[in-house]
Length: 411
Figure 1 (cartoon, helix red, strand yellow):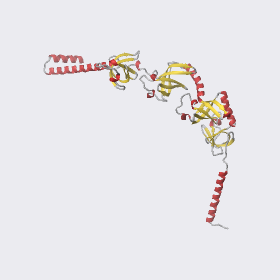
Figure 2 (cartoon, one colour):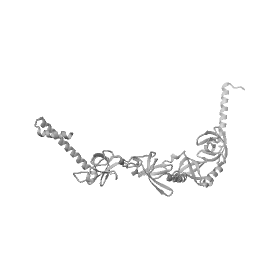
Figure 3 (spheres, one colour):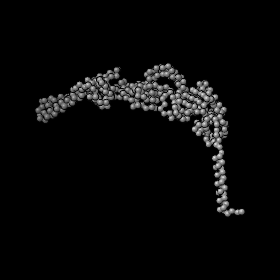
Figure 4 (spheres, helix red, strand yellow):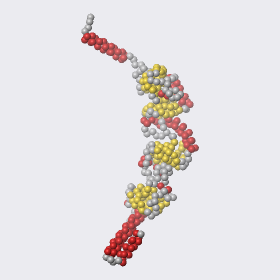
């Protein structure tokens, strides 16, 4: 029996479709291979990364092995893409198979257990943020770190810790390693004790050092002046000029210079007070030439008080206008009857005391000075006018005398 070309083609299509349907049916009937914790498998290395090695597990899920457990003494990875290696399943979580090269689950459990018993640190990578804390991968196992135990400072953005590697202390080990709790804060505080002791031996009040702003509060700024060591610069110590809010002057991450003004021991902790203004030039040590008693200068009103108003003459140089020095024509009961915050005013410097860093100012005397100057100018202009008229009229005498007096005064 023979087939023409069209019949032969149709027959091949039927056979192909039949084979495909059979293969599809077999794939549905075939049970998916499932892995169990502790199982030993052969896995092919797919890629080698800085943190993890990705392998094929023979299932629809790829596996992950910490790179550092497959490196030699020099830090070089011992495997490459295409290698087939023996691995043990340590954990299956969220579609990821975690594996380790030696000893299986029990050896990992023993290692973490020994770290717990010996109170020695272990290294882990923060995998994710979960309710109340973080998932931390340690030797292929996921441990839990409460959010309060991730750092010694308050955590504002937990996601910033994900993907980073830290040292931890194992604080709880139960159920043969199925319930492991770790703390980075404990590790930091133990090491901070050593750092603090060294800091106390090397630093003293008056030392100037560099630091980084780590936190800003309404009362001041916290500055890290050594790894894990912070000091507080009170708002009054941030600048020689008046600062209403620390955030007006600083932001987190700013590099600053500071002077240690106090160190208080509080058990295992140090309370360190800092000053940013002491690390900068004191404006009182080099007063501008115009800042002197009797001079009329302008300044900006910075604060209104029951007893008067403060005026900034130069950055870091403030003076006080008492209520009694605000007007010569009426009694002033409140400073806001005459000035308001932010207003530029003319004042006379009545008293200047660099030792006590105080300046007494007067609006009243500045106005009187201006009035006297204005009257003097009016008299000069009138006398000049009379002299000019008399000179033009050849009247001589009085005009000549006044003109001569004015010329003499000019000289």
